[in-house]
Length: 180
Length: 197
Image 1 (spheres, chains in turn purple, green):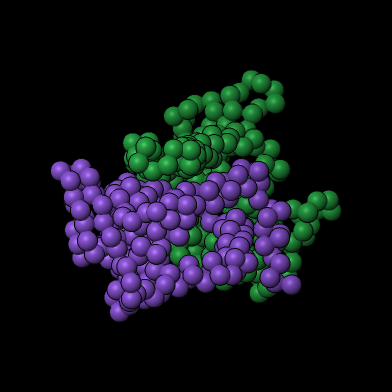
Image 2 (tube, rainbow over the protein chains, first blue to last red; image 1 turned 120 degrees about the horizontal axis):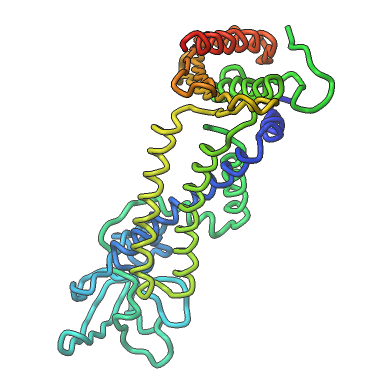
């Protein structure tokens, strides 16, 4: 039973070695987490990387594309920008283009959006009674994109057992593999 | 050819590993060496090097945990400054850890003290470093022996042999063969340290 040789490996690890394995696992997760938080700070957006979930922006973006967002205060939103926003009360972010804006002074902006591939503007999607979006609804503006990569996220969200299974297997290998 | 075993515990079963995996080879030889020094020669292991490594890793993980928790309770724009501090410190600490493991620890896997039972002589110390390069089969073991009585005398002995000498066809460790070689260099180091007075 060659595959179970790792069981002997675990038994042979002394206490400090085992603690180091756990910390090593923690450090791998922490590195990923810190990179994500770092990106959040650098781009100014609460979710700097999003996956396009629908085909409403074809032919520019397709379902499964990855978008990099920035949300700098100094750059005003203009008609034609592609923004990612969240409607109050719903968690799923939407990626559409800005159609019209109304701006008062420098501080107050309200705007209307529409998906390139949709027939009508987004007023049907907004909360009942809401006719315009404001700066606070915006997560960021699309600045870069990577095609197809987001399909992995979509798959893992549609089949959550797959996600837990992969994470469990990866975590297990990190904890058991000993490398001084 | 399998090693002879003492009867009692699980650690004395003949150790079998994947002979092509160089990390497993190095770890097995290191563990066997530690076992010899602790059980046969009665050295007590000094855990300070390992403890320092564990502390640095723990501090890094704590920073990242704090950032996670703070951001959970104070969503993004409010937590910006805390996140910046935590992220930067985290990466600095990881840098320190890498530096520590690469240069200060550098392959040292055993630091031990042999305390004289009669209490008259101060303790003798041993530092053992091992290196096994990635696709190489030569195992380098460096033993640094400090005689307690005269702290300026220390002798260094090196064991450089192919791992093929210590593992058989199936990847089983030939404990006795390895221990014989270890014993030779240890005795050599002790007698050298005594000579240089």
